[in-house]
Length: 146
Ligand SMILES: [Zn+2]
Image 1 (cartoon, protein in one colour):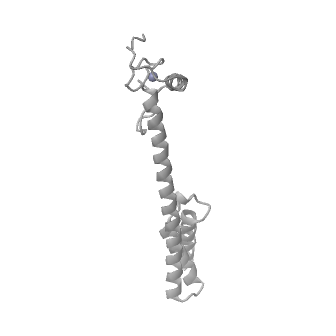
Image 2 (tube, helix red, strand yellow):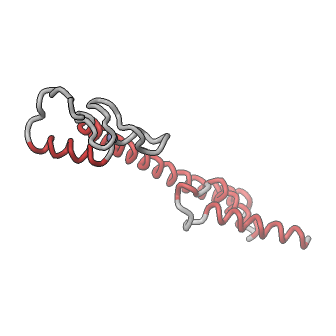
Image 3 (cartoon, helix red, strand yellow):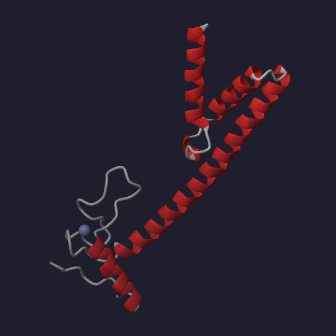
């Protein structure tokens, strides 16, 4: 019985670590929350049906919060990706002064692999932005930038 009490204590600790409100929502485990609640309720002598109902409510709450978080995280990522793509489209209209990539081609040796899309060198982005801000883009100038 002593071992059981120790095991239970350890389990409750783990469940709490996996689901308490100080854990960032994206790492919070709804099932752990539900399990924790049902154990606590039953241990406290709550009627089983009520205990299960409370556990389900706790589970659903964490699950709902996580869904909301995931949805807004996805929306934010899509927004960022769109911004990067739009910026890159402008940047790649000019040749890169850093690596020599021609207009229309991506920079050589930039960025982390696995990223959404390799970003151009900063100088290229700056150059493109300054040209873009200045005047109307020159109609495809021969790229003899050497
Ligand atoms: Zn470059």
